[in-house]
Length: 185
Image (cartoon, rainbow, N blue to C red; front, side):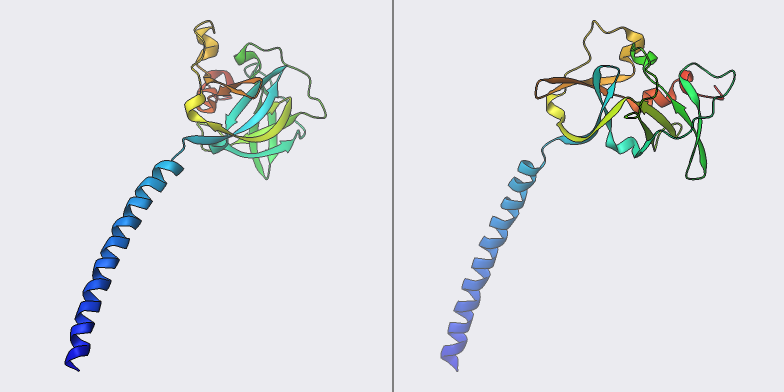
C-alpha cells in the first residue's frame, strides 16, 4: 500500500505537471488563434446605383424586397419617392442617386428596395440592382478620394477593389440622418 501511495503521489505530481504544461500550451494556442481569427472584415450588400457599384453595411440592412407600390407625397424633398407599406409599417422610399451625384433611373424590374434598420429613420433605399452579400477586408478600404466633392463625400465611407471592380462604400447613417431624406425635416 505504501508503494502505491508513493507511486500515486509521483503519478499525481507527474499528472499535475503535465496538466500545467497543457494548460499553458492551450492558453498560448488560444491567444495565437484569436490573433489569426481576428481578421478585420465585415459583410456588405453589393448593389448597383446607376452604372456604378456601391456597398451598404449589412449591419444596417433589414431586408431586400421587390419594389412595392410607392405612394407619392406632395411637398417632400426630391430624394423621397414616397411611402410604402412594409409589413404594416409605413416607411419612406428614397433614392440616393442624386446625393451621390448620379442620375436617377426609372424603377426597373430588377430594381429592389433595401430596407434599413438601426438608423435615424427606417427607410427603403432604391437600388437599381442587388448582387448579394460580400465580405470586405476592412484593412483594404481606401479613403474617399480628395477629388470627390464634400457634399458627396460625407455620404461615403471609402472605396475598395473587389477583383477588378471599384466599389464605393456608402455610409447609411449619414444618408438617413440627412435632411434630404426626411419627411418631417
